[in-house]
Length: 184
Image (cartoon, rainbow, N blue to C red; front, side, top):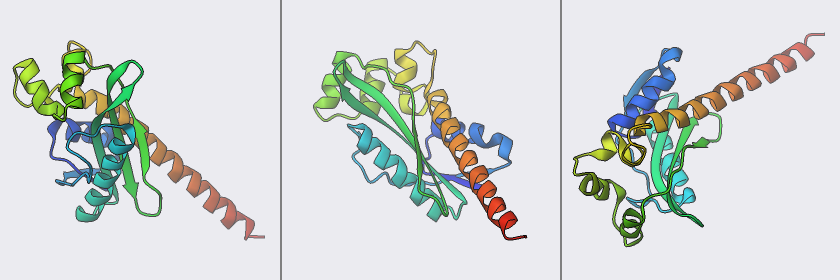
């Protein structure tokens, strides 16, 4: 099975590889476009970015499965929170989606994002590090390393792979029942 992830981000690639390691899948990465803003500002926009990446990755990677993982933020009554969504695109089925952990962002970070800045560069400056988004991510910084970005996306990947396996088994079961019913 060939799986294409629509990203070159090492944290996302690691999550996909880990989720598919028991399925003997070949994982390739494709630089796919999200089709949304650099800083998705809602669940809907973040989901759309994940779905777009998954569809493009499957097509361009000539893969049975395309994966899109997208990080964004969502305004809530409690402030701006991190959100992350994933999508799995496979031939013959609608894209599957799954969301992950959420934590509130400090007000000083939220203000900058609401003013139009992107989380990645803001986090690099805030943490005085380079490429936070390719390593621990904002979630790693704000959880003191208890959860890193790859682990956060691995949870989303497990939700996607589990849904995919469920649908495949369900479809096999209904095909078997139809076949059995015609063999009288």
